[in-house]
Length: 108
Image (cartoon, rainbow, N blue to C red; front, side, top):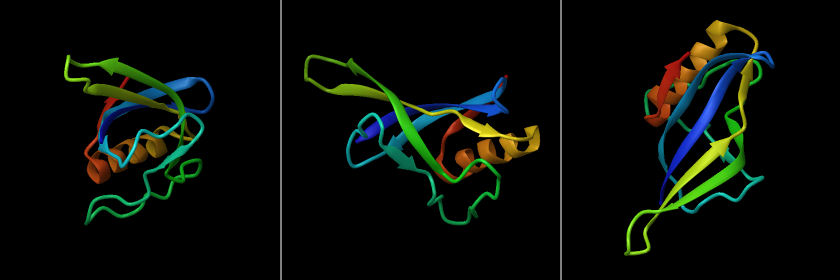
């Protein structure tokens, strides 16, 4: 099942660096409180070594939108913020998620 994910990337507790979003193919819609493991990137993309980011992101909210009369649904999974210590670390995480999982990032 394809779900849309949305996650913010922060430097410390207050400074927003950007956001990452896009579609992931999951076996099921993860319930609130569970985690998505972004720890197995695409072939050729190595792990990212950034303090504060271990690849496990907790599901904070689910938004489920009806798409059409065929009872298809569109699901947005909102994940906990990724909090890093430096701008460079944040950009490294955003790059890892883009290259490793086909997601898109936007810097603010």
